[in-house]
Amino acid sequence: MRVVVQRAKQAKVTVNGETVGCIDFGLVLLVGVTHHDTNEDAAFVADKIANLRIFEDEAGKMNVSLLDVGGAVLSVSQFTLYGDCRKGRRPNFMEAARPEHALSIYETFNEELRKKGITVETGQFGAMMEVTLTNDGPVTLIVESKEKSE
Image 1 (tube, one colour):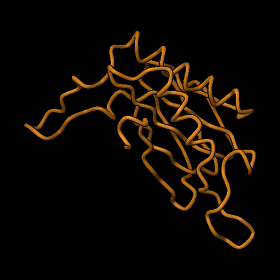
Image 2 (cartoon, rainbow, N blue to C red):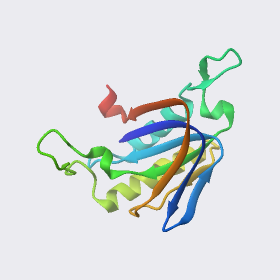
Image 3 (cartoon, rainbow, N blue to C red):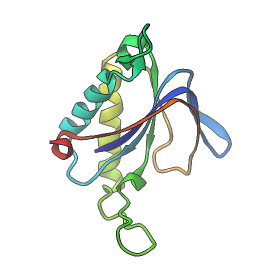
């Protein structure tokens, strides 16, 4: 799995002009799934993100997590995170998981976050979405599943 993590003051996702997910404060997660990702990868990445110390403490240092600050998550599926642009001018998406596999892993990932007590709003899987956010910091990180980060 590959997740782009963005600390946000507010964010929303719209599909065909209708808001389908919205948060006031927390993290926007752009979530990519590849063929070999498992439910264990989803649980690992969810735990990593929930506990990342990327919010500022009283001293202004990034030292507290999403769980500590009580923030929410706006989770948006994004197969293009596995686009390979090394050759030619058109990205190759062969490493992106097939929709049925990606949806299962994506839903498991969101459920793992919810199990931790985090409010999770989502986009609409497979739809053309518009994501609007106010990036806080800006703080933007990439988190990958255990297999990739070792």
